[in-house]
Image (cartoon, rainbow over all chains, first blue to last red; front, side, top):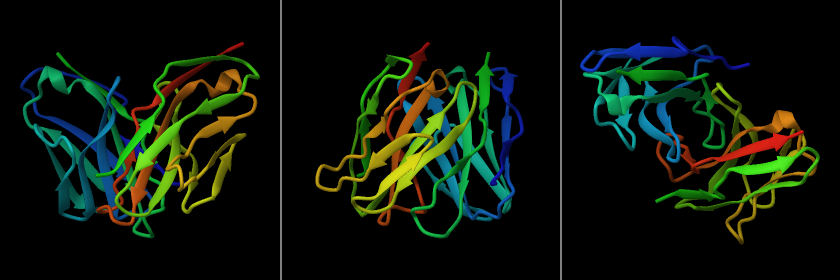
Length: 114
Length: 114
């Protein structure tokens, strides 16, 4: 089974801090994604990456950046955390074997910015 | 652009009741369709998928049929259990989309009472 592991289940940070959320997948997938999930808004795509060192903006990239130095790891960075970034963050991956392949999700990181 | 509309929740049912969650879509290319489920405190799991018209996806007693003529992919289950309580997301990806991006509906919260 594919395993997508997010480094923290719960995280509490302060306004203005630089925050790193880590995601690792063990199935050699080319594509990786970061979403945030908010009540009433569903899942919104922040950034995705289709190869090492490659990234593309999703629907809501403002206030975030990403890093993909190795194929298995995709990091989401909040450069200067703000309270409106309090949310559930989900990482996902999928292989380059046809667009009908499902995405595999981690368990999520619930981030609170105080 | 692509979009997914699913019925708003919450949906509350008694155990052994019949479940339908409606999902309709618009897509620029030929879509693959998915239902994901999110149990409390967890990430999303693939529930079922269908990749071409008239395909029926099924898993754990849930079914959904890809209806191209009505652009729909409604989720059904004949007899729900308390353990089915979760949030259900309809989603699509298309051959015309970029890098396997998923477009999600906003989710439907299902609560099943004993």
